[in-house]
Length: 149
Image (cartoon, rainbow, N blue to C red; front, side):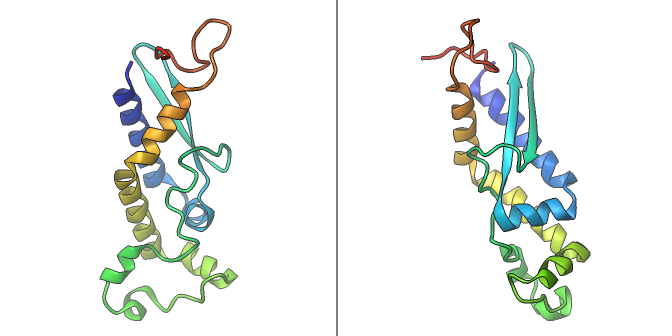
């Protein structure tokens, strides 16, 4: 097992989470971040689960836009004609609009996928932090078989 394999597993898990997230989960990530990784690895298999709001790690700020629409909206042309005029930022109406607008959700997913691809530094830091966790009585990281040092 090596760091590259763990990074690959983390990337796949994040991409899967983005594809399968509910609209409310996407909204929460764009509002306040909060993604976290749960990693388990042995000599042959990496298992990664992505959670929302459960664990604060290097991924916690991934995708956070404070509720602004993803930058992809800028490329759609006449926003009012395509998106419908979104309610003002910071209002409950804005959240309801997002939760009912499939196009906004699709673009939120695209934005998150781009963040996963572009923010490789966060993914690496997440894996490095996981590798650096304290050793257990067995002489191995609680969840990491990788050698320390």
